[in-house]
Image (cartoon, rainbow, N blue to C red; front, side, top):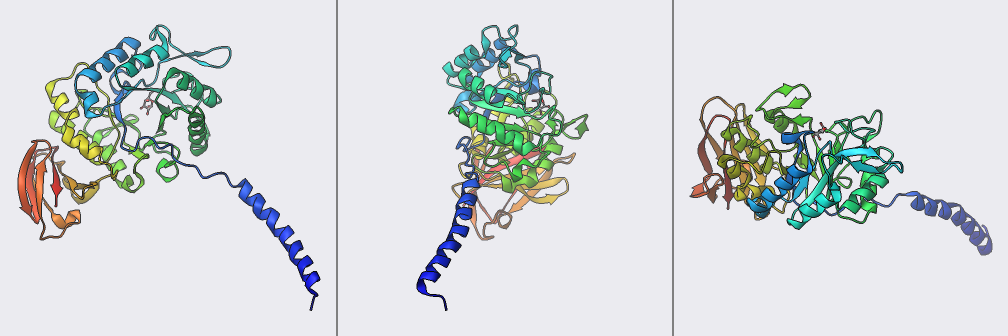
Length: 400
Ligand code: GLA
């Protein structure tokens, strides 16, 4: 039996062995990564790529900002004006990125100031590799330097692409840029564009505010076209990821093609409805300074936008798949459901949804409002039935 003093010595020795290691281990633990707090609802805005690709310049961006401020888009919630690829000049002697002075004669800072003066926010594009997809200088090795430059220009949103990244690890590369943006002290929404290759939905909730889930969208209804995908292909890839979206971190099935001419008005309405219901970022990709009335009516449908911007932030999903006929539902903060009856087939068809499929009791009498006809359809008992055109939707809000 050891004497008390011996016991004390033994205890102290044991503590000396254990404690420093425990403290060291705690010291080594990186601080938990916290989200940047931005994009509590899916980002809304405009991006140059789908319509203008590399053919983008200062005059076009100003024209777009003017249009958005005056045509109802800003009032409807579209906020970010984002220049995609091809704005860049070379790096200067100090390694700082410059802009293409032919296309942007007044520079990016002046353009950001112009956009801000319209009450809008300003976004830009770079790439985690050595070059952007359009062959301009990427940010690899210049992450902190570029983030600082963007902040000094007044950038509010960065889309960060994944071309020319070789064997780079996506989580490491995107976290590095997220840290660099954070370090600037400026609020910059971080839009990750690595096409879902490294499953960012599994690790990026506190790294980016949105992450692409698929390859590039193209202005076609369905199918694969080189490396781009039609709207239906993208819908089917993005839908199963609904558990991973929420306030501050969204699945991004790519920017809108509404108004670019490759789909019918009915199809564009479906595209927009499904994006809204999937809590996707609503980034217009058309020439918003020259829109026809149909395009306007789609992009400015405030009832559909309200579904997208609902503060609960749930991504809706397909609750029934009968082949060509589908039912989609998104829970909303007030206990309502946004519901889409979707007809992929070649002829108009009637589609029914039972309240039980929405998680409501079969006996419920619920108010139904048509979000495209902007019409109350009264109280419906147990179910709702409507006819959806070929490639079209009926979109309603069901309120208990
Ligand atoms: C990639 C992206 C697109 C666009 C282009 C620009 O393809 O996925 O959204 O940014 O690069 O070159």
